[in-house]
Length: 225
Image (cartoon, rainbow, N blue to C red; front, side, top):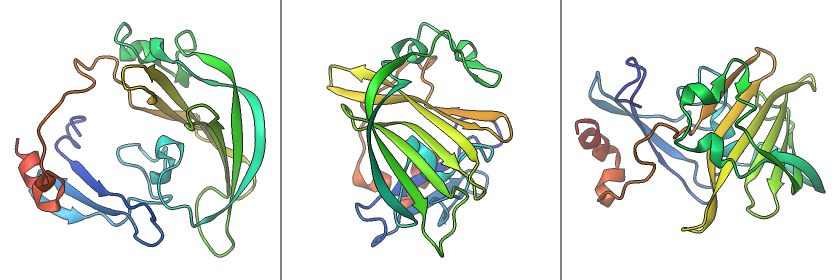
């Protein structure tokens, strides 16, 4: 984290496993004030996401992130929907973040939507487990397999949050890549946006790393650079 000042210098290190039920995610945080590395066991499920002011959960990241064991999953089928797609303008460096972020939602003059075929996937909370979302519906782009839209419902069955993943084509890789990610809390009327790169001088910079940089002890070195 580089800003705001109260969070600047904090580092989160996450080790992911293919099967997060068998091998749960491991996470550590570095606190620059204390110069200490601590375990972060709650970077999972519906615990609040980092620096999101309670507007997203950890498993909201990239529409869904982490273990799948708290839900029963159902493939509903394929349908056509207008979804965020080819969002090069809103993600590009020709506009400022202040142009993109508007009260209540992203600037609709910059956002782009296309009619696409998507797979609808429904996740229903298993009995005996807990999560602030009782049901979630994901819409997966059939071309890129990226989740482009997600709806989350509370325990009363009411629509709680709506999320969008705006992506861009990267033909030199080649791949379709996530850019701006937005989570709308419909009950509070607030939203959080992640992944804005509009004013970044470099989106990608090749740097030299070693395996030691991705160890808990390595966080101290990164935090003092």
